[in-house]
Amino acid sequence: MLRKYLSVLATASVVFASRPPPMGFNTFDVLSTTTTGYGLQWLNDTSIQKVSDVFFYNLQQFGYNYINIDSGWSSGEDENGIPFPDPKRWPSGIVGLANFLHSRSQKIGLYTTIGLIKGVYQKNAPILGTNCTSHQIASQPLTDVPNGWGNAYMVNTSVCTALFRFISRSICKLGN
Image 1 (cartoon, rainbow, N blue to C red):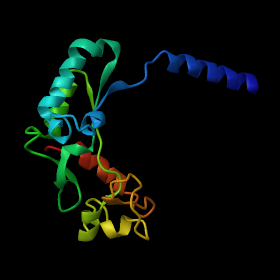
Image 2 (image 1 turned 90 degrees about the horizontal axis):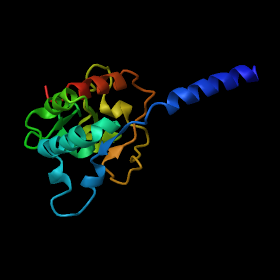
Image 3 (image 1 turned 90 degrees about the vertical axis):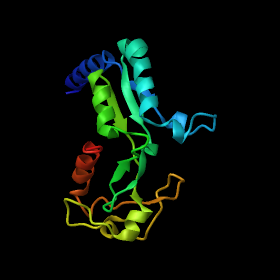
Image 4 (image 1 turned 30 degrees about the vertical axis):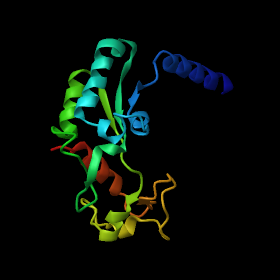
């Protein structure tokens, strides 16, 4: 039994060692700086396309193909709590940017705030595609997400199992 386990482990090690880890860029470092010209105003379609250019012409041949956009891309949430892109900074929407990156064999990652935004909780917004509301999915007693921003409550994931399928579908439709 031990010999079989070691054989499987050795095979897995060779397979994983032969693949590079996901390599790319995350906008968080640019967003979190106070350097002039950077911060939230930097996070826009033009800047991300410039990052894509650097990857495409200089780094992609070495495996750099992930471009991850941190949570500053949204300018709010709709009546159901679904974040939407800032139309001034993303004139083609997130879908337009994703199409551009994909045309270059690059992959887009999209971050959003973790937890349930407090304004969405206060509206008791319905969670589309489910029978749940924002009041039902909030952990009780209401507890801030421990990210230090104080803008969201923790979510009780056992209350509404359809929630995560809905979130995934919603994020995939951004910009349409």
